[in-house]
Length: 271
Image (cartoon, rainbow, N blue to C red; front, side, top):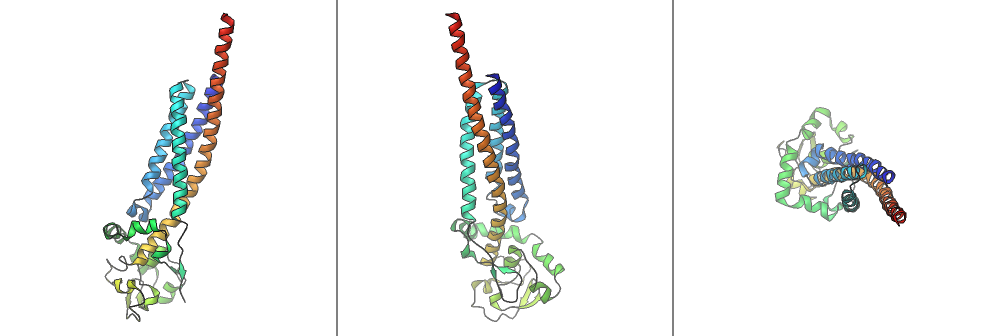
């Protein structure tokens, strides 16, 4: 019994360590400017990581100090957390499976269309109430202003590999035919009817294309890339937790078997 309980304790120490990447993934997402403006994924990940840490700690204590009810709590709670983590991993994969940039003639950067992304992600940015809050957060960053310092000529800018948000929020869509003055100032559009975003473009440095669908699409493209990276971390951690849980279940079953065998032997001795 003692050996099996010690195994459970050691295994749960590994589970405690595995909670760290989950919490770390959530904290990493929270520090990214776009995720800090949207505030969708980071808190569920952080909360799930903290709960995993608490449950693993309960299993660790229950194993070393031989507290059966704490071990049973660990087995039930950890199974629930593993299922929740698996659902989150699958969900993130499904909502980020769609969407990619589109090349434009004579441009090194890509442009992004909102309709390319999953319906669930689009609903997070399409509501004017939600987008006004996100837009205010995004426009307060120095992202677009930095482009003016980095690129001094049209050729340099057209050959630049812009991030999705720089491409979508800091300049008008290429199809509008605006003439370049600097990265965030464009004049004389050729075709204002080519896209609704052509009308939404504003040379006011606090407005730019923050009201454009291309900016929303650029934000979703950024989220997709960052969420996919976090999802890989969560998937690897999930595999580790399943492995730990299976070993913990086997050790718990062996401990119960040893306990029953010991009680049987004691009963036989008394008779």
